[in-house]
Length: 340
Image (cartoon, rainbow, N blue to C red):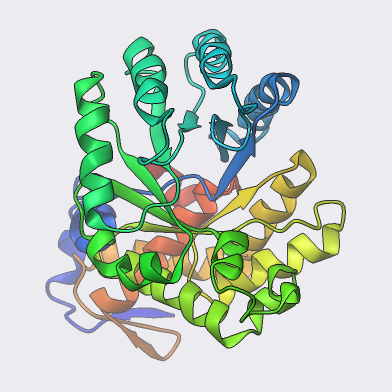
């Protein structure tokens, strides 16, 4: 049973006020991104990934994963220009509603400027974001912004990849930058950056959740992102043929480490990531009941099944519904209008 604690004001509800406008401050700055970011660097896999994105969009009614075309590790050494040109043609042929991103070389790589000139200059409105790897500082972000803007991408969000102890140390300052929309953690480079001080098993699906330095880095990035309303994106699981491993890792990232997005490097990882980041049916039902009751009470405090709720908890339950929508779950009928 739901009861308003302010009964005389409770029935005047304002349906025109959207929960996001009432409840989200800093946490609404970046908006809700798809919970899966799928990387591919080979032409055939790029095309198949974009096709799969369309198929799952039809299945779920929303885009449930981004496709990031890789011009860093995906580009053959010495053939960076040809690879970038090929990526432009693939992105140009993508469906109009596709969410396509691109990863360029780091800002100190000889191919960085040409990457941005070719990729952003050719299709500034096509990309949903540009991923900048190996960011060490705010100065690296500023350098990337200057290059992207010069190529015509003045409205393009940047996603950045932190891959070293120094980068993690600067996570809060990087997250505060207005063009940074999301921060990802580069697990394998982070481990190798310690000169053998972290054992190799820390790059595996079990070790990455138990080694203290890796755990500390993941939590630092997640906290920095949440402090500034940005999206923390969890690292890859290299055991890509082990469905149980990707499920365990995604559940840990979502439930224990505060991540709201995760990388995929194989199509078989996408659905387990979606399932792990999605709320349960029971969570959705409770969230729906509380948000609807809160709206009827004009967002004043209510009692729901004997528990007090106000805007602090409303914010949480609204985010449950946003996450359900982002993962393609079928929302309870009464709240679907919020996502129309």
